[in-house]
Each structure stands twice: as structure tokens, then as C-alpha cells.
Image (cartoon, rainbow, N blue to C red):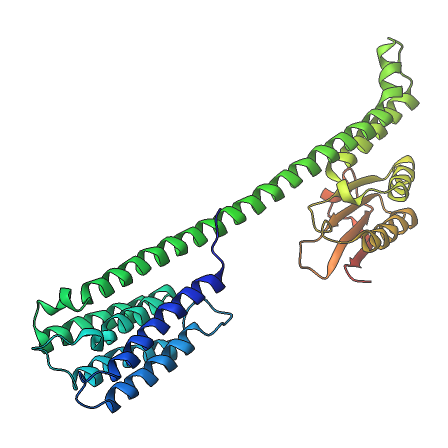
Length: 335
């Protein structure tokens, strides 16, 4: 994409504006203006408005107060200069104000004050028609000023549309990058879980595939392995070597352990997660409950993990009205 330096555009605008000032000063040396003082005031106003409009700033859009000043200057300039001119004669360079107002309004349009720019050239056209008639619109260059404002309007609209499209494309690129990163993370995690599952289940699967009959101890080991594989799927971030060991010990004594990770600790750093999971391992290892449930809390909650242990009751402890809470632990998100 080809870009034009901002300083170059400002320099060109300053050159055009300076040229109009030179023409205005030159017209003072002739006998065209009846008296030079209104023209001098017009030149001073024009120079002040142009310098303020071209002064470097952080914002591309012209401030409203400066736009109002430019519009006021654009209205006053024709009144001051034409008050000393005769519309019936050839005024030559004394009509410098037409191009000056057009340049000032073009600068306003380029700095995204389109309403002010159009009002300024419309007032210039109306004043010209009222002063010298409709034919003066072409003879004095009012049409050219309107064309320059129209070009600046189209360029400003095109640049604004390009800027909006650039922002949309940048946002889409960030979203695509985030989606790709999430997919890569899911793929890596899936491969890691698959490798962990293979490491756990391969010995027993080979034993089953050999065709031998399983003993009661081996069947119990199969159930333990099945629960461990389920933990790898549903437990996700709740699993560390210490948690796995504590859960295995609890199951070996006959407890039912359920680990549910719903993404509540995904945003924590490694140190905070290790602290939370260390407390979880200690809680599972230290309780004698018959059923243990560990679940991550929702994001934004001050609690990271909730651990509940139930004891007593007949059959499934979680469904029994006689079950008692043997453990209730809320591990805080912040240490």
C-alpha cells in the first residue's frame, strides 16, 4: 500500500495558502481595492485560520472550535474583500479570496469537517452570485473551489472506509490467530491425554487380548483403570501426579471419586494452579468419605475448586437420604 507522508500534504497545503496570500498582497499594490485595510484584515484572518488548521496535532479530525473559526473566516473573507471591489470591472488578482476560501474549506474537508466545508463553499457561491451574478461562478473560480471540496470529500470517505476495513481485517486476523491457537492447544492436549491413556491401559489391554481369564483382582484393576481414564477426559486441569495418586488410593479403599473440570481454573498461572491442586490432593488423601466429588467453580468466582465428601447410607451414597457430609472444602482462587 502506497502512503503519502502527512508532512508532505501539509507542506503542499501551506504552499497553496501562501500563494493566495502573495496574490492578496500583490493586489494591494494596484489601485483595484478602494481602500487596502479591509483586505489587510482579510489576509490576517486567512493566515491565522490557515496556520491553526495546518498546525500538527495528534487528531486527524479538526476540532469543532477550529472548524467554526474556519467557517467564520470563509464567510467574512468575501464580504471584506468585495466591499472594496467593483463587480463591473476586471479585478484581476484582487479576487484571490475565492481560491483562498476554497483552499481553507478543502483543508477542513480533508480533516473530516465535511459539513463545515460544504457550508463554506455554498456561502461563497451565494455571496458571489449576489455580488456579481451567476456568470461570476465560473469566471472567479468558485466552481473550482466546489470541485476541490468534492474531491477532498470523496478522498476522506475513501480513506475512512479503508481504515474501517483495515480494523475489521485486523480484528478478523486476531480472531483467526486465537482460534488457531485454541485448536493447536486442543490437539496437543488430546495427544497428551491419548498418550496418558495408552500408558495406563496398554498393559491391561495386552493381558485381556492374550485371551486369559481375569481374576477378581484384575477385574477390580480394570475398573480402576476405567475410572482413571475417565478422569483424564473429565478431570483435565484437575490432574497432577499427586492428585492421581490420592485418587487411586481412595479408590483402592473402596471410595468413589468423581473429578469434574469445567474450565474454572484454565486462566490461572502455573504456580496458583499447583497450590490449588496440592490442597485438592491433600483433601482427597486425608478424607475417609465413601464418595468424593471435586468440581471447578465458575470463572470469576473467588472459589477455584469445591470438594465434597459423603459417607454413610445404603447403596449409592449420593442418592441416599442417610448420607452425611464428611468433607466440605472450598479452595480459594487466590492464595
